[in-house]
Image 1 (cartoon, rainbow, N blue to C red):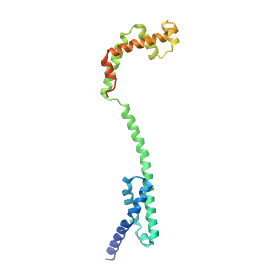
Image 2 (image 1 turned 90 degrees about the vertical axis):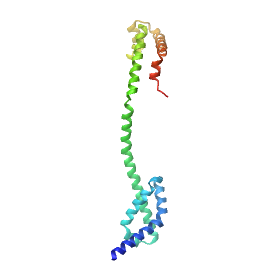
Image 3 (image 1 turned 120 degrees about the horizontal axis):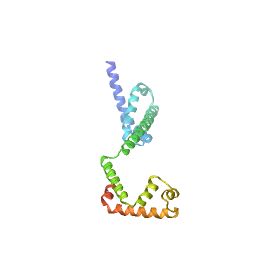
Image 4 (image 1 turned 180 degrees about the horizontal axis):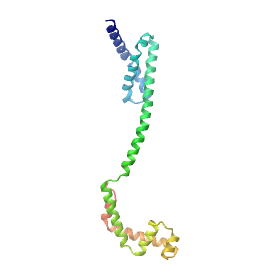
Length: 189
């Protein structure tokens, strides 16, 4: 019978603590975390810790009891922040890796459009005069400088830049004639 009464008294004591100190605990938890969404969880965790120390709390005078409760709330909030930072560190790295993987994979539609675009460019380049094709190939595929292009194509080095400019202009003009290529490569907005 005595234990039933003690349990009832402890329940009343915890209820009084909750009613009396809840606003202070809420304020302390928010001061530390600056996050309203976790304050309630921190208070609940703090009360679980306080229930384990109920005999100590009963023996303390009211001033020390307030200090003990606020210190428990503070430590619970700090523990939450440490755990949250640790979890965030591991979770963030994991999600960044997943974003990289998903970004690196192109959709089937994008792959098809790219393939069609390359086919169109290939047709356009093959329709260019031989000298223009060779100039663009040597400059952009083989990545040769003007001196090497001049030597391989037997063209004066001074003329290479102007010939390249004209070859690019002719290729662009042909690209613009083929509107289907432009619409398949350009992203839809």
